[in-house]
Length: 98
Image (cartoon, rainbow, N blue to C red; front, top):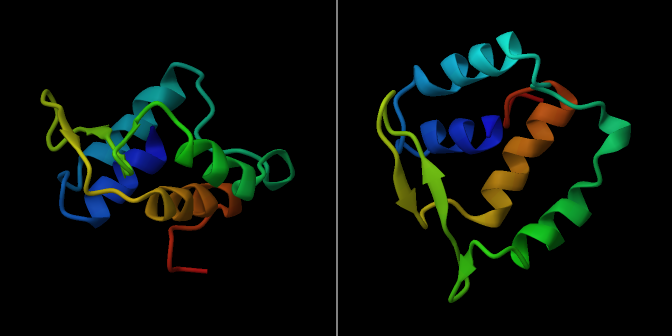
């Protein structure tokens, strides 16, 4: 969810307040907001996403939160963009800041 919110913000599909607020809420609920590098196989994640039920006619359809209290479905997020954000979470860096 955090990777989805981060890539939506980066693409201008969500306001900048959404991802940090989501991360804070998940943290307060005790939901992990990052993962140890050794536990994630990003190639496997990419392959799984390409076969996911959210792929329709070749497009990944994701829910995005453009602002707190609203949600939209979009096909503007590619599998590679989402995996790039996941990679940033795994390495503890924002995408492009490594």
